Image 1: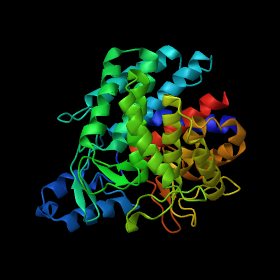
Image 2: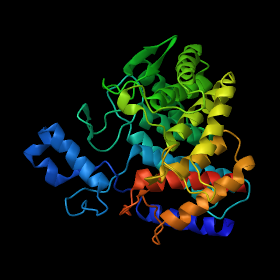
Image 3: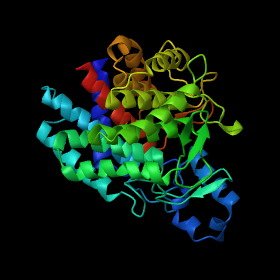
Amino acid sequence: MKSKIQTSFLKLKAYCEAENFKGWDPYDGMNSKVFQALPLKHWDLARLAWIQGFKRSPINFRKLLLVPKQHNSKGISLFLLGYCKLYKAALKGNKNFGTKEELLIHIEKLTQLLLDMKVEGYSGACWGYNFDWQARRLFLFKKNTPTVVATAFCIEALAESYEITKDKIILDVILSSANFVLKDLSRTPHKNGFLFSYSNIDGNNTVINASLLGAKILSFTYKYSNNKAHKEQAFKAVSTACELQNEDGSWVYGLLPIQSWIDSFHTGFNLDAIETYQQNTGDTSFQDYLDKGWEYYVANFFEVDGMPKYYHNKTYPIDIHCPAQIIVTASKLNVFQSHKELLEKTLLWTVNNMQDKKGYFYYQIKKGMSSKISYMRWSNAFMFNAMAHYYLESN
């Protein structure tokens, strides 16, 4: 089993490096030069239909409709996180994926790329996506609109890079991100706390995992600055998210009626963010919520053979985020070894059912025709980071 997983990871690594970590994304349809030349781009319904058409189609029209392969900040952060894990493995003598010197070259390259992709013009360091995105008919996120989600992944990756390189430029960028969270994001009051907004744009303000990612960023800035105000605001956001946890340990995605689903990988994001807060601040007062959430996570989103489920009450579509995130979350919560059998079954199922012979991973498996398009951020970067975590933990 370990040999098969290692071979799979080597193929994925070779594929991503050959592509220079550039690729397409499920939501990048509006990057089409054809669409941008049409007056339809000014109509919200047309924008939504165009994006969803690209996202749902099992046939890839991107090359035909002139959608370029590009770097995505969240994708680059996931690759950087993965290389940092491989570097730690190399320090222990495990060099199947490169020596520490070879891996450091990738770490420095991806770190600089991430720093160059930082969005300017806001109160602190922040990142967005490389495409316009229409969120239903509610609002339009323009390309490079900063989000707390992209920023949180970038900050964690830069923190890992800083631990290795000790580059003060990286540290300054990390510390600066607190101002983005505290000054540019809005807050939705809830009981004695609040929820951080998804972005600086009003309209998506009640997403639980997004709020927790704001707290996650502040926990990193507190770790390196000992600024008590950062810890206090992070504590309030985590407290609110824990108050919103259901009695069985689950979370809905958000507080709006259209956000009431319960899914696998956002559950993993929530647990990861709360544990990161605890590790960075030393405050372990939320451990009971973590324990209850983890028990729900492993009991409701994975079949006996390791097949991952998207929702708590139905399987399809099987999304690549689901098997990837549980490995990362288990590592973060320090429960990898006690759940290694489930994690290996899940990873092996994913390799057998969702990896192409070229090395990349598929986006989703559906009951009908599935998409086998290679998406660099959504599929390959997430699996790269997950497999790097697996490799470090299992060795």
